[in-house]
Image (cartoon, rainbow, N blue to C red; front, side, top):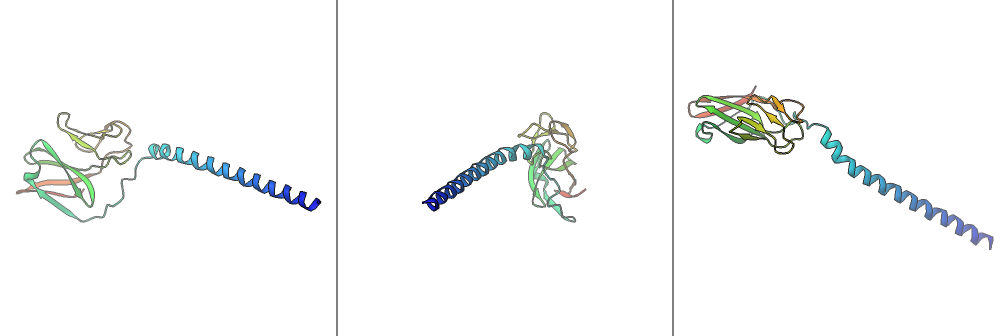
Length: 153
């Protein structure tokens, strides 16, 4: 009879330990799931991925009219080409340095705006306002004949 009582006590402790461990793991996963987006928001995006050197890219000059911008893929990364005058063109990474959203050209303000957290950049990629920690990477861009050439700065 005493063996049965001991077995019940041991099995009861095992169940209680298992339940306590299950509850602890559940809370740890829930807290981790809640903290991950907060930490991701606070840490800036890595803007150095995928920057191999030596490539030249071109688009037709007719694709970007004077006073407008066009989003293209240079080195497999979103790049924005802005053309203010006939022979004045700028090319910048379109990936915001805050969290990696794609910036948009606002013709009225003559600046790039991030739609996610309102970071603002000038034509050279410099931060004008918002949470972006550093400027947008710039590329060399030039109008040659009927093409716009883009290459590493």
